[in-house]
Length: 335
Image 1 (cartoon, rainbow, N blue to C red):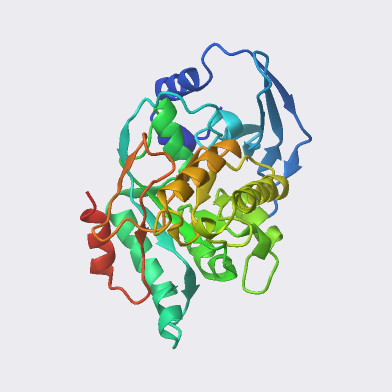
Image 2: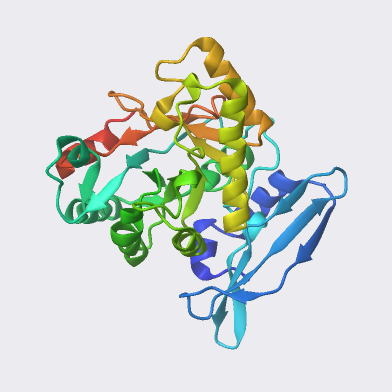
């Protein structure tokens, strides 16, 4: 029932069934389907909320929804929801794949021209530069995946494209919706937004309505805390609230699991103490996060992601004004 493009992404029925077998095994499931509803702006696509209960435990998966697309007189599955590539991680036990080469790129602002302010210009990629970067990725065989897909590949050997890349938009600025989002859709690329949930609906940031539209189109949202706080400078209770509140807000507003995190300022792994690092790692596990991304891996940059360090994946920054050759080199040279 999968659309041809969805089948191609999974490299065939055997690969998909093997992924499902590894992920769910012999566990007994109950499921409940919600009321189907249209996806605004996506033609004949229909979203069906789904909840899965595990009979052998109290575990429950709520979302992501099943997405159907009308093909002729019937419906085909565009996204298999919790049973699909972007479904949530059920348990982090013994990963099947110990390492995967996936460049994870960091973006902040987008604009037609670079701002006059030096710091703002450093954090801003022009629309022309972004278009060139997307063209380079496509011409060199790269395909975007989500953070969830990477972790599903670690844990359950989900098949990935030959050259996967993850594009992360830090801080959930509104210019990503205005400038980058249409370009991604036009090229069939996806992205991940690291959202500061307390800033949503504020000037300069995404609205929850925009986030819902992006999420429905396949853009992934992960937590970047509630207030962009430096976790190394907080008490344990304060840090716990930042992690839990942001995760809860994403799940309530977007109706799908939120299991991944991006550290503001890279802290406590940039300059925090070993004690603060361990505290935050413990809190991430306690509040239900399956993994987390650091701010930057260098230089030298690193694209090799390790399953035994699920809360310290490496990323590569994309700076405003950098030439295309530097962008390409930051990916190609990453060991």
